[in-house]
Image (cartoon, rainbow, N blue to C red; front, side, top):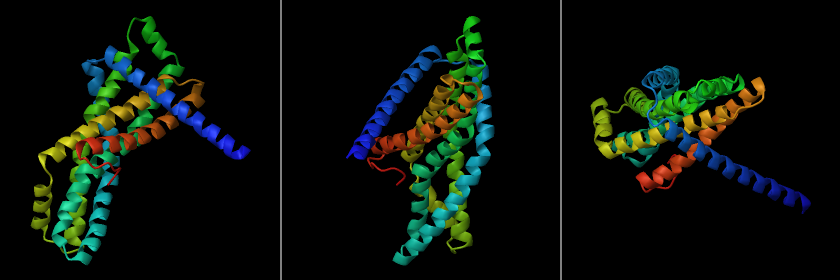
Length: 264
């Protein structure tokens, strides 16, 4: 009984800390947008380039084999029911609705999110952010806001790249290994993907980019304790960003598709 009581107390304390952290994160984002609704063009362009350069290769290496795997498993399942013509729609919808925006955001969180959190945390530990304030330069506008906007702008572009690689990986397996007609497969993908699917993918990716960069900057902004604090902030940033992406994926799926499911 005492063990169960302790477990419930720990669970309640964890839930309380989670809610408090989410509230602080929301206030942080509101403060950043209020101070840096229009960030400087130079830092914004620099952060967009940095994020793109860091994430293009990881997105490609992850999404390409995932598209091939979906095609391989989907072909085996569909052939057992004798409806081979449904492979292209299966691949296209899976890629545009979940694989492209979801996995692109995951790669940005793991690759660029760690870098963003570490950069901001190092600036906090070295008191560089305090120096900005002493020079009457708003660090939220010049340091944090460009990274938030860069995440919102770069994530949709990476999702488009991820969609192309996913379809190409699926096409290679379907045509090369399973004997499907190349033209029929590509036409099936193009017919299945609607303008709304592309718009929803863009919306999801932009929200994911905002969430992961907000979490990374938030953890870095409140980092304390020297090098150890930087490491802890980076670890919390990755975990928090991935959890945030999964939770927002559920909400956005419910709103955009009317299908309340995560990665379905």
